[in-house]
Length: 290
Ligand code: PMV
Image (cartoon, rainbow, N blue to C red):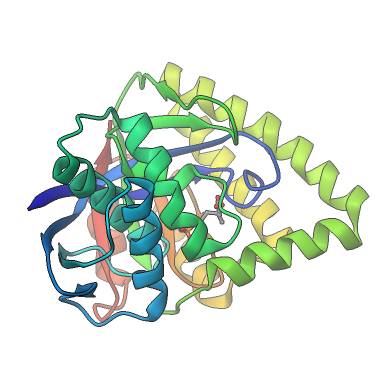
């Protein structure tokens, strides 16, 4: 038997642009997905899933040279399809369980590399940020094909995360952005340059604890995400609630099209005002980062 866990994550700056090569900043959240694996007759899970989860599981087990006949037990409160990294947390947790089954002791970067095999099945062309964020705690500066860099925060961040109630398909949204890049390269590369500069400003703001600047950068990042067509009316409505109730900044987080929005807040009071205004049927929670 092997067991392991992976964290939920939130991308703070740079989703989508990171697939095309910019830096991005993200953090793990304190929600976890835990996996236990037991040798069995055939590959199966204790939860209802599509065939893609089985396929991703095979890819991860095979990256550890393990056979595919395992019973996989999953336990989590991370919603799937909400942009909080269910698939990455699953891939990381299964990689840790598989490493334990093999008797390996691996660091988070190696676990993230194995988990990437699962993410490729889930998302087609993932940047690798989700599995990186899910495999360790804290804020990370990430760029494709470079070593991820942990970022020291001057002060912890308080955020509210709220689900828009719609599911976005990461694969389709990423493909749509690729199409935009091919069809309007000048427009897209100009936005990419702006995003890269914004992510670097955000890294400095995190290191200096400049929360008002961080909030303004989140708002600007949301504008760029809107321009590449990955926001939605539901996300826009949430973002307006965040801003109306005093958030320093707000944006979608993850692939968009649905999924979650994240708002940076200053005080408990701001959090409760936002929590009160959001439909109680949707997942909404306050979290501390750092
Ligand atoms: O759908 P999510 O929350 O897992 O977000 C994926 C982030 C993207 O930048 C859109 C894709 C990627 O692989 O980086």
